[in-house]
Length: 442
Image 1 (cartoon, rainbow, N blue to C red):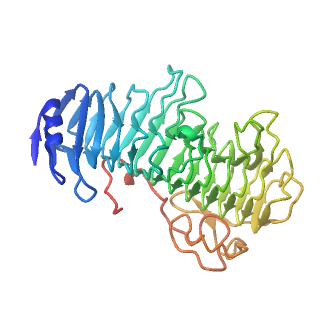
Image 2 (cartoon, helix red, strand yellow):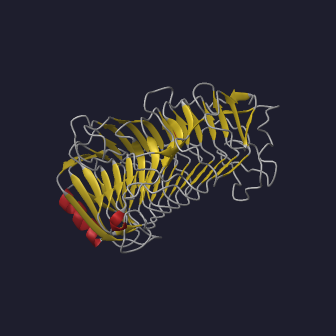
Image 3 (cartoon, one colour):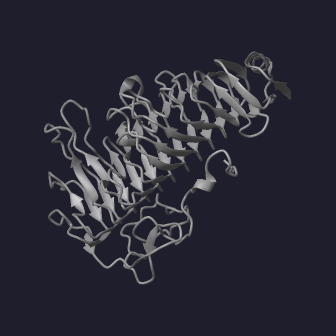
């Protein structure tokens, strides 16, 4: 173990470190550009750790290069940012980012792979005077080295204000790279808690392929989880609480082979789930071969928008969508909005709704029932004894083996909606994320 108390000594110590070494930074306030380069391994990273959690404040840009460096326990000030410029296996753990002025608070460049951002907090981003892109976390997809395999987990994101323009202020952006979203990133974003993240209409913007967004909680966020480009992305087990706040939405997507399963949406004032029409110039690609199944939508202004149009030229309707075993409890407004009213290529089965009108000519696969929902302590509403949703799912769906709580579903006789078993806790809560949370086993 090496102890350092200056930027120069820190850079030198990491550069000289062997795999498994630890560099401890003495408690205090530091400033300046920190350029860290070192060589760890997957089994034995080089760790750069604050003397005590939160005891080291850093004011200035930080760059990580090399392989398997772990930056832990720092508090970053107004003029700070962290860039992972290159290499494999870098980690940013238990760090605090508050009210930074940087364009990107954390950026993973396209020459980096298998990087991790975990148990950090990102709070109070004032975008009101900004007119260009200022994502809190940006991941630039690598075209040269293939899938990225990044992991973003157990972080707390809160109080991200609206940008001075309507675009470029995502809380997390998975960048599309040079191939316009057709490349595979295979990044996992899970168990994060988002609270009033209002930078722009896309809270998480996915612009590449084969990513998984799961078990995150969104509270009063004025935007949506958006699959903006790319194909083969999955949203599973996420929770959205809108509390009736204007502009709160659920999941919006375009492209091929997208999967939306086991998600819970309540109190949203925008659409819970939205599917794009395609347009001739491919600004938005039409939805094809998507699966929307086992989701629960409660008290939302609109349950499902089919054929969201970017311009009047967006007239290529979604094709071959599976819409199955979703539970809709929306007492006001139409359940489904579809300007095309063309669901002829869809497979629709096992959906149950209560409340207001369906909103489109009945295509089959929907039935109106009293859902008999009850609220759990965590806030999610689930079917209670006697509900037609219990055991009411149609089809086997062998790939759906768990519910929103991660609890097992039976091979047959699954419940309609996101919950198979009543559990008192959300997938993640504020006490389970951020620098002070107990760390879960990977």
